[in-house]
Length: 179
Image 1 (spheres, rainbow, N blue to C red):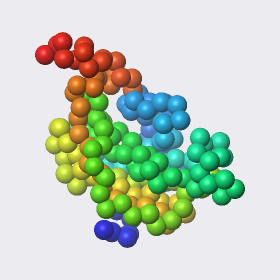
Image 2: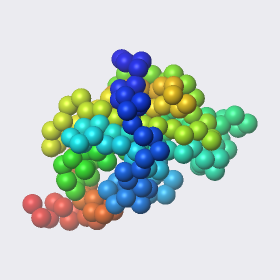
Image 3: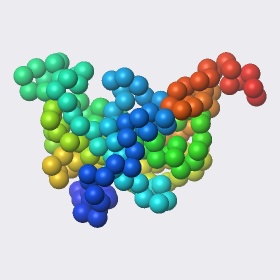
Image 4: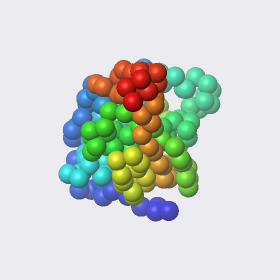
């Protein structure tokens, strides 16, 4: 597994914003405390790579309890944040409206901490892609250091419904009734 960034960040303006939190909400179905991405910084032209940012705040839902007196972002939330970037890239590339979620997490290694006040950059690079499935390498970076990396797979779940303008609008029953 690489210990260098999977995307050359020196060639990217990390202050740029190609998608805001509101733009992301038009694509991803995550809401409230589970909408993890604050902005997309960069997407390549092929929509096979991307960089996003999460500003880790003092009022995050996990701060008081994970670990009292020394809050650390849970690893599962680091992976979830990167998975939201991977899903967003998949939706933008395919235009598919059926719900897509991640199905496998592999070779994850945690190499550092994410704490309130950090700018947490997420990197995502396609490994395999089809209209039904995707596999991506993911990384999280804080202060230029890789804090986690791994590989996630995702797929489309048509029976869960459609995501239109960031909202799940059809239930399992209504999707099945149209088939």
